Amino acid sequence: MNFYSTNGQAPIASLEKAVVKGLAEDKGLYMPERIKNLSKEFYDNIENLSFQEIAYTVADAFFGEDVPAEDLRRIVYDTLAFDCPCIKVTDSIYSLELFHGPTLAFKDVGARFMARLLQFFLKKEGAGEVNVLVATSGDTGSAVANGFLGVEGIHVYVLYPKGKVSPIQECQFTTLGQNITAVEVDGVFDDCQALVKNAFIDADLNAHMQLTSANSINVARFLPQAFYYFYAYAQMKKKRLADQLVVCVPSGNFGNICSALFGKRMGLPIKRFIAANNANDVFFKYLQTGKYEPKASVQTIANAMDVGDPSNFARVYELYGKSHAAICANISGATYTDEQIAETIKEVKAETGYVCDPHGACGYRALKEGLKEGETGVFLETAHPAKFKDTVDRILGDNIEIPAKLQAFMKGAKQSVPMSKDFVSFKQYLMAE
Ligand SMILES: *Cc1c(COP(=O)(O)O)cnc(C)c1O
Image 1: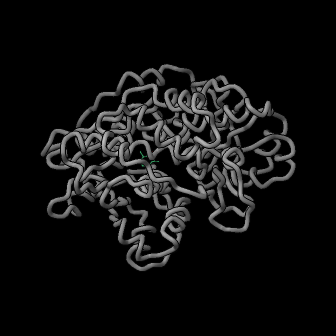
Image 2: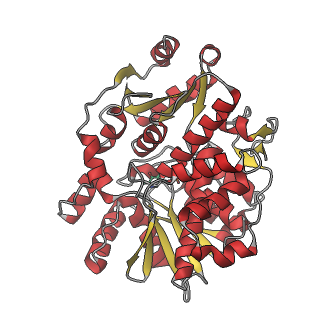
Image 3: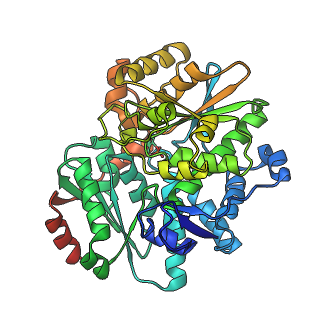
């Protein structure tokens, strides 16, 4: 399958090129040329399939032309070698918990899949080492570092702002060693992102080393997230609650919801979607006005969604033929302040005993406010609440338990490379690698 750029000015790319390069030459995002419908038999029988079987069928539609069946099957099964996401009831609203992977957030699946697919292509070509650069405000770095840990032929540099990520987050990518280097930047998240962007366009660096991105701009990272939505549908169908399914996705860069929209295009019977935002409301405003106006992000307690210019907006726009009306017919929006998020975490706990993380809380609230008669709502619980322990404890006056998986990270010794936010020193560092 070939991929084209949303900016329309770059050459058509093979899957391999799209995965190894990440971003197209014209800075657009790669889109598959075709989106296949899955068979009626698959949908009729989906509730009897395992998560891995469902995921393999979905992966085959996107990657099956380029990756032999036995390799793709291994990539999918290795990616999903942990507990399945699970559906929990919070009164009449359902939560699909996507935090059963190694770093307890949904990005594990995309990161693990991308690492394995990239490795497949490198082995096939006998190519040299690829270097993944990733800027993080917390969650992406841990998922990417753990997803790529120990994967031969790939080195990962995680750039993060010194003192601006929580200790729990920091230990998830600074204690790993092996092929993972944590770069501690004396600056803010935007400085880290600028260093990465400058590195991608620097001619000397690109001549010196092969660089790629593991953000959700990469097709191998965002498309596998569609697995979750097929699985959610299957679980709800099993409960006979899938007729008018509304799925609400806490959204930042819109990679996750974008994969869901691809799923719908493949025939997945989800009635409509809600994109729940924190105070960063650029998409919400777009739905209201038809104008997309990026702005600087503001800091919130749901910080993995602090995005002022969601990169996957370009894909959503393209998928619906650049039609505002078509987008509005399939997706509605919501935006919540930190106060509303905190209020929701308290309310859900009091009414159901369920502890939401700040991102999931946006999803819950948007369903609570937006579901119509006859509809059933599922929101994605995108991270384990313990990843945001300080915030959640403060809001609930509680001391929530840290799962063993997370505690294990906290025992390791921190290793990081100190870096100034100025590109010259970062470049010098990479040139010497
Ligand atoms: C990354 C992230 C999001 C936002 O997902 P996007 O694909 O960027 O829209 C939501 N919640 C958590 C916990 C995340 O880590």
